[in-house]
Image (tube, rainbow, N blue to C red; front, side, top):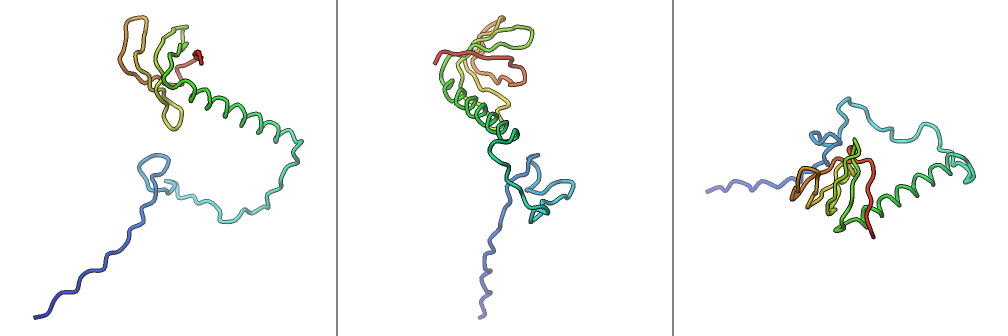
Length: 129
């Protein structure tokens, strides 16, 4: 009696999802990143205008992210378009900081237990640390 050989398992490498969420890491238009830069990168002197602007942007981004972290669990007053003000308890934001998850959202027409606020609708926000 002859036994059938056991199949050897083959590892599968799964690429992460691409930016549109449907593909697996490949650009839909077929473009590819160059393996090596064609022109060697030139480091700009620290006193250049571009360097100072980049440092300022990095500092502002860090302050913004720290403010989001400080808001978690606190009551926040959001000013929306048309001057509408709503108050809610801040919960979290998505990875792209495009939406805020809030609870106990107090609006002019009532209270919503949980909601997502689109950041594009928010003009400003304030909270007490």
